Length: 271
Image 1 (spheres, helix red, strand yellow):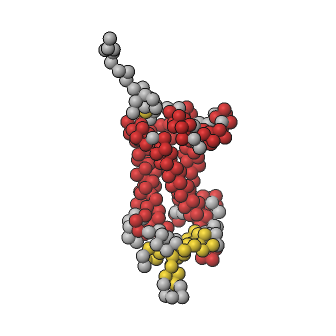
Image 2 (cartoon, one colour; image 1 turned 120 degrees about the vertical axis):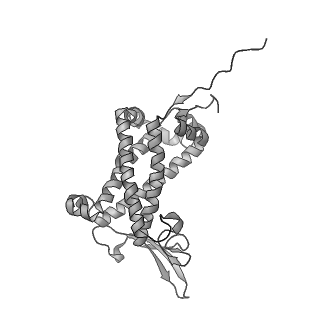
Image 3 (cartoon, helix red, strand yellow; image 1 turned 90 degrees about the vertical axis):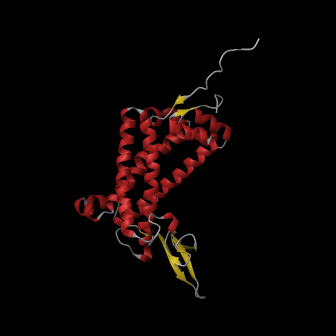
């Protein structure tokens, strides 16, 4: 006799609340705008130093167009005293000397004043959005329940790293929520990288330097603050790329749907 019972509905877990999703997607747009405008600002002086002075001979990172014997110009990027030919990628785009190519900057043409306006506007949005996320996360105990690393989880960290080498284990862990490695990454971004971004950015402001000289001292000079700002920015870029790569590995449609609708369907319970 044919079973007339309706099929069982797929099990769904409400994983991401609306404020978490909204601040997440806002952050995507904000960070893209900040990165593009930040590279526009960097291109005005494509070199980084430690300390207070901008001595061209002491730059730990410098991008420049260098003429060679045949009359050809090459793009040279110097990193920690070693020169690399980066023509067409960095330091020289076509015949135009510039640190990062036009397609990476906002605006795409050389326009330092507009780049600064974009960067400052989105920097304050970054602060407000971050405060909203952290405040909501602490008030609803989202941070404490889902992101805070407990003692037993810290002891599981080596095995978690090993499990990341297995795609099956990785996908299985995704159904269980945040693993210890994810928690450490998110906590570093929230409570180390993001504050460093904001404080190092403020330390580069001349009027804030005058009002709060201790801020510059904290970073051992404005040029050090600029270097730290650059390093942290690319640390966030690296975090984002790894994050996207992991989403693709564990199932992009499932993860994206959860971050758009809030609902997550574990494997084996429907598509």
